[in-house]
Each structure stands twice: as structure tokens, then as C-alpha cells.
Image (cartoon, rainbow, N blue to C red):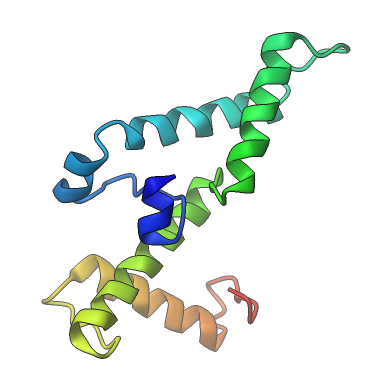
Length: 130
């Protein structure tokens, strides 16, 4: 939870910067493993008519992680990774007009968010909350 206290969320980036990897050397693997456990648990691979102790333990662990804001949906977690990267960019630069030559992946993400906001027919329109 020290990561959460410092960064305000529980979603450790999958491709974390080197400084984060040094500071939290096992957190990326832990998050990956928890997402796999969650997927197995809720895809009924471990479910049966009766709940065994290992299945109960997985379920309890998943609920505890959800309580601290851990994101099991990797697609959503990746969205938040880019969002937090954009927040850092804004804090460093004072704006969110990312130029392609500065950071191509972030530029493309921002562009896709703007297209989604405008309701581009090729993309799913986001709600106000997103």
C-alpha cells in the first residue's frame, strides 16, 4: 500500500519506468499474478458446487484488492496508466497538448481520447464519467 499512498492509485504500470521498478521490484509481477488469479476465479475454472478453502482464499484476496482500488481489468488499467502519464505531462509542461515528436504513444492516446469524446463513429463513445 505504500505505492498507493504515494501515487494515489493501486494500478502499478505493466511497463513501469526503471525508477518505479527499482523502488518496487516485485510489484509488477504481483499485479500480473493477481489479475490471472482473478480471471481464473471468475471464469469458473476454480468454481464448483461447493467452495473449497483455496477458492475461498482467492475470492477473499480479490475482494481485499478491490477494496484498495486494484484494477483487475487490464484494459482499464492501461487506460489509467496513460491517464496518469498525461497528468504527469501536464504537471511538467502546464498543458496537455502533447506533440507527436515528444512522446508518440502518449500523443496517439490523447488523440484517440479526443476522437472518442467527439463521438467518432469508429470508436465507442465515452460517458461523462470516463
